[in-house]
Length: 278
Image (tube, rainbow, N blue to C red; front, side, top):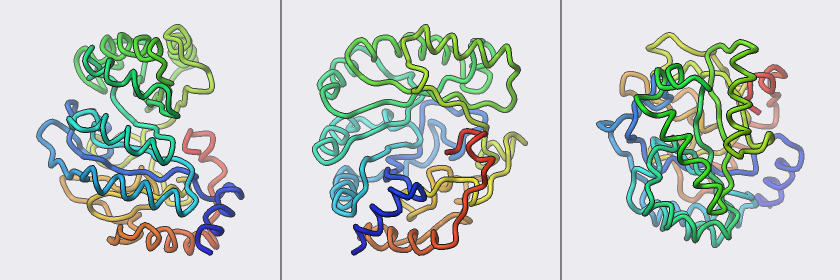
């Protein structure tokens, strides 16, 4: 019965077909607007490989259609390729990454995943190296632009996420032209506003988003189940719980049922699509 309710909600467009997991919270970067205040020194808050695989199995049985993995930087954990490969035996996988850790050994390892329904979403915020790196870190632009064609060349589908505080028409055209030149399709490029949560709040950046601005996307972490991957954020090293659904993550059916109960009277803000959150 719950599976039918999940499928119905997905088909109606009121629930994302993707189940998200925060694999970890530490990162090799410390981006200015990071939702999770991630950095090399952040608490890892690691999900075990066994937990992630179990959740993927449960997600498939519940009617979810794919898995999203985010962080932190998922590729900062040494077992991530093995975790992805196992999850791919159940559902398609998209991994959000900053795109700076794709050395040759990792590219060789990822080559075997290209035959699956697997994609990477890489952050690239500006066609200007200086502007991009001001948000994300020294040499970020060069590393990302070097990695993307190599990933595409081995058969990995690459999506680009451009996160902006404000953007002129010239800047918008420039980043779109750059992304196309790197071999990424127009439909695989998403542009969205900075969300004023986590480190962005302390930096006085981004737009304030309420629950009705975020597509319901069940998101699991070491701390619990949340409304959206934009939800389990940290501000001054404290978890923001305003979009927490439940601290119970096993079984996944528990948080799924609770989320569905919240959707009965839910209506998306129409302007959310314009800002790239749908």
